[in-house]
Amino acid sequence: MKIAYIAAGAANMYCGSCLHDNTLAAALLRRGEEILLIPTYTPLRTDEPNVSQRRLFLGGINVYLQQKSALFRHTPRLLDRWLDEPRLVSWLASRGISTKAEDLGDLTVSMLEGEHGHQHKEVARLVDWLANHVRPNVIHLSNTMLAALAEPIRRRMNVPIVCSLSGEDIFLEKLVAPHYSRAHKLLKQDARHIDRFVALNRYYAEFMSDYLAVDRRRIEVIPHGLHLDGYITRRNSETAPFTIGYLARIDPDKGLHHLVDAFRMLASDDRLPPIRLRVAGYLDRSFRGYLDELESRLKADGCYDRFEYVGEVDRAQKLAFLGTLDVMSVPTVYHESKGLSILEAWAAAVPVVLPAHGAFPEMVEDTGGGIVCQPESPTALAAGIRRFIEQPELIQRYGSQGQRAVHDRYTDDIMAENTLQLYRELTGGEPADRSSEPPPAASNR
Image (cartoon, one colour):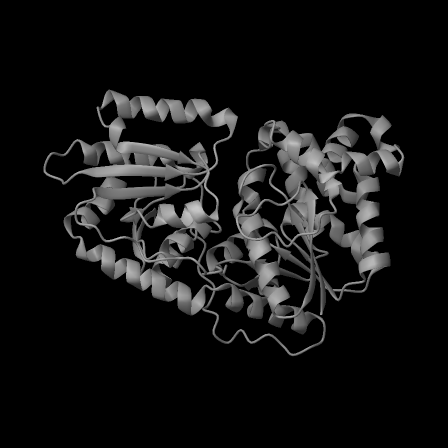
């Protein structure tokens, strides 16, 4: 089967969606499928061997310039090709170009207008290339912000179109008037041209069914799967301090401030053994002040020496980081739709403490890999972590349960097989077997 998988790059950071797309494409390639992982906006950055195409479409520089100036909507292809050079785009992305929704309202609306927006020639170039050179059996879009491609693709090629659901509402909800209402309306219009959507969990399938105004039966649930090579079980040292971990980008949305405040409460309790907080993840320069403020709180309480920000980590560093943890928490403020780093913690037999919203309750219930607590409450979060400090046997129990669940149900091979079943159903092959999929969960958002 020939698959065109069109993925959105995330500038210069490791992104959960990019990691998912690359892991899925690599697993399909190992199965002998002919899949092209096609980057858009920026090259994909991944901590595993990158299987994406070097060629870049809808390059971030061209997209931006065509939004800002009519002149660049009519430039020759030679100039466009130079501006789409992946090394140039990656270099500019590393200079800290804003990806904040608040700054990108007009551009977001134009991209959702697709062939009717300012980037129409970029859309046409991608569609022409797919029709004339790739001629795929199925096309998969990595998120609904690319859904405007579906209508022109459908006119040129009689192939099914699949679209993943990747937390787009979090970005869209930050758009300001008048861009938000226009973007949301366009997104629902674009969704009509998608044959099937894919969500990573039942919570987000249910939520996005309402958000996009699409029939829930058009949304498949195919959980993320990990490539498990290199994962080791957490260290077991009675002499090391109890270690709380956080693995996500440094961003108020991810709730690091709640974890820092919970840590401060625990660190001030003389009845508890020594504890430390280790944090890993991408830090955009715009959030440097946010991290500085958190570090100031820790210094004021006299526990800064037990805090460590290790920076952004590659795969080897990530696996080593997970091996130092007793428990992990990413207490997001928003309702999580993916939870990739949580699966990574479980793969290393690290239990978790998470807020009881979004996909987290569903994930914890399915795996038995941790506990949930009241959202946006450092006090409740501290109480959840305290259970593991005071009852260390829970670390082994919940960590092992999470690890077994990942090996049983959340591997890249299982994800690839379930995705292939969907492709086969849509292309007239054998139907997808979804008899084991649990019933839709009620939305808690």
